[in-house]
Amino acid sequence: MLRNLIDEVRNRRVLAFAALGVLVALALPLLFLKSAPEGAPEANSAAPAAATEAKLPARAARLLATTDAGAPGGHAKGSAQDPFAPPSSYRAAAAAAANGAGAAAKSSGDAGMSSAGTSSSATSTKPIPVVIQDDSSSPGRSSNSSNSRSRPSSSSRSTSTSTLAVDVRFGKKKDSPIKRAIPRNKGFYIHGKLVAVFVKYSPSRKKAIFAVAPGLHISGPVSSRVTDNVRYVDIPAGSHAWLTMITANRTIVKRRLDVVRARSVRSAKAIPAALSAESACLLGKLTAMKPGDRFLDRDACEL
Image 1 (cartoon, rainbow, N blue to C red):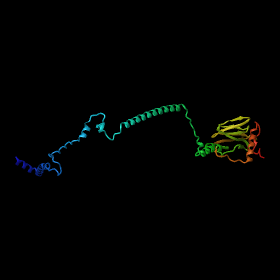
Image 2 (tube, rainbow, N blue to C red):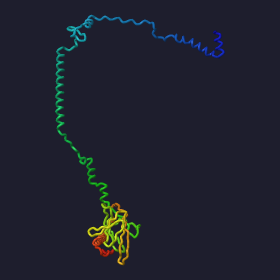
Image 3 (cartoon, rainbow, N blue to C red):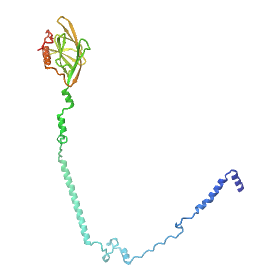
Image 4 (cartoon, rainbow, N blue to C red):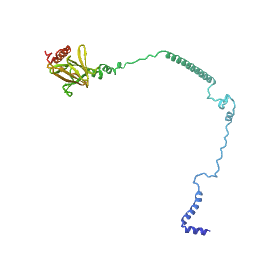
């Protein structure tokens, strides 16, 4: 049977593997039988002998064997008492002092609690004064606060220095040249005759107010009104009015008055004193006219 096994191994060419397996089987027992390192204790070595109990002196034996309750820690009484222990009188005085200190601490704690309770109740009923400090009185902010009071705000500054300027067109047709920022008491003429005067721009009405001559015909998207025997026409921005006049030779002449816009400007145009006085004179004469009066000439107020 062994021969058949050898032949089988040889035919299958696994002789090397078989030899390796035999070597491993022989080496394993050798590894387990390896000797222990030097210095290691042997397993069967005898255990060290137990130390023999030492015999105490006679006095130590008596101290350990005492059962007296008055000797704490096994100490003896009388002549065998601990020489370093304090006398009994000292221990009594120390105990009395400790008891007195505890009572004093307790009484002081109770007094503190009672005083705290009374103080808290007193403070709860007593109003607490509140001091409000004005920031303007502090030295670091006095200059800033004074400057903020003395300097007007930007909105108030712009309102106080800005005025409303009105841009108009006046001519035979719709697209006449624009007259920008017309001054107050500005006169409008047809063939040298005064037919209208710009009075002012009303922010409440949002309209430009013109005083017109009594014999003038007004047409368009606006209408005229009479106040204190003076005839006015109010034209909002973006609207217009047609002014129609009949001349002395019975000729009908029409002019279109457009209010283009009303805008805010920094300052109005400076008008010479003589021209301003002449314009005010013409406005006064126009408002004094009555129906049927002749139209005023351009030079009616020349000095």
